[in-house]
Image 1 (tube, rainbow, N blue to C red):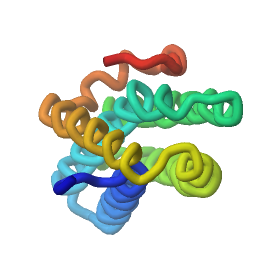
Image 2: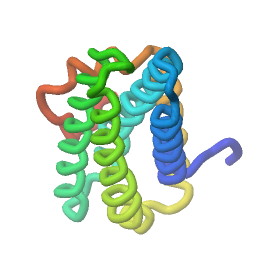
Image 3: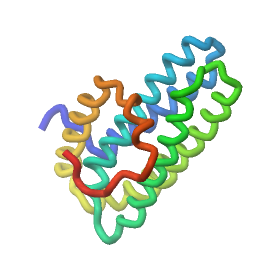
Length: 169
């Protein structure tokens, strides 16, 4: 199988991209550049959350992971609420950087501590390399489709309740 990527490697790579974008936004003093970077960040977070909620979480749902996945969808909800606030403000607003800080903290905890630290090791035991590669291909395909559609624009409508944990294709 060529051109496959392990689902866990893909998600970790996306976590890295998000961290990198947050760093670029923090380093920027240019309002316009900040806004462009933020829109890219918001799209990546929205598409990443969607592929996890619609495909990854339901695929790895077991008695051993259920509680963790419920918490993960609640963490996504908290992130989307901060994102929705930020989407409604100017990048030059005094509170923008404060919200970015909160967002960074929420994402670091969710992606690094919870997913990479606790969930991914369980998934690595549940699925062999081929299964993770097949899932990775599906995740990547869905992500590439979503990212073209400015998924950040959907975020404000996703802030009422956490995503359900069933497959949504």
